[in-house]
Length: 150
Image 1 (cartoon, rainbow, N blue to C red):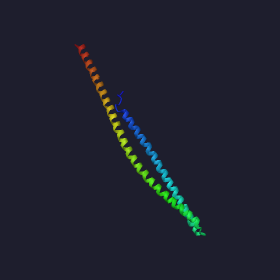
Image 2: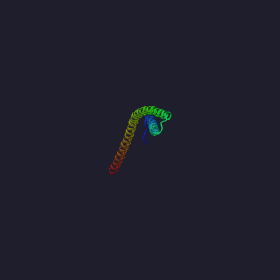
Image 3: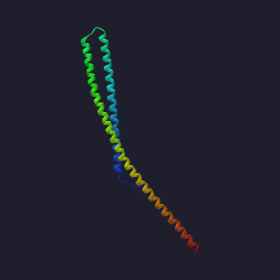
Image 4: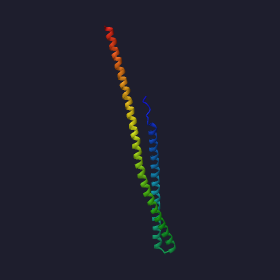
């Protein structure tokens, strides 16, 4: 059985950090999708209001209703601009989280490589000891055979 890796606690912490960053990335991507869905819904609502304005302008013009629709379209435009800003901010946040994730995974992988090298070194030492013991047995058998022949 290989000896315990001296930096196992550090490796566990780095692995936990990677998992936490992956969870954060997932949540942020979900937030981005939610913002994009809200923007799509607002744009659909804006289209419906514009179509209704067009229809109302074909009939007898009711300025009050047209003003309400125009006000709604303006509110939707302002909301869309705010959502666009939120989407840009969220995309930047996702990019930064991805950079952090890559860095964290590289740090974890570095320790994994060190752990594997330590295990390999241990296996080589065990093999060297086994080979030495096997040589000692062969030498001892050869000596015993030589003693019996003499």
